Length: 186
Image (cartoon, helix red, strand yellow):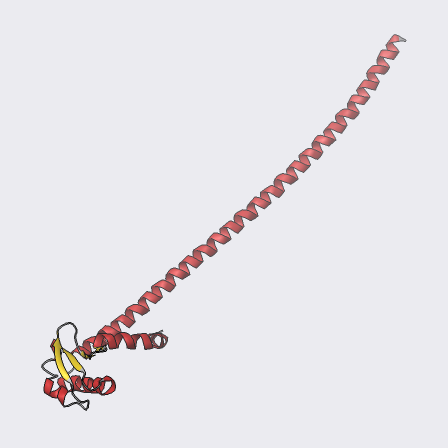
């Protein structure tokens, strides 16, 4: 009978061990399944983050490229406008005596006051004489020569100096029409 009891204890222990082992295997398999599922989710999440990062970097690179392209276009447009105004300035500085006199006449008529001193550039001295200035329709004009500018005139009196030099007139004109020129050219 002792053998029977020992055998029964062993059989019961083996059966219980089998149940415990089976439960442990099931629990281990469930843990493996959950861990694999977690790994898959984490991998998918990491891949999605990587895809988003790549998309963000591509968008950023595209923005940078567009910005650089826009800057280059603006720079090219500005260079074209600069060239146009440089050419206009050159043509104005090279105008003949008759055109230079007409320009001064119109500037003095429009802006001059009786008693003003008309300052002409050294370069225009041969085309614009004090006799010519005296013959303009504004009374009591005086004449002075300066080498500080090229073309146009400066009107002076006790209360103001009005610069109507070609460079000042071109700056004013450019400010007024630069946007229109850009629209026409581009």
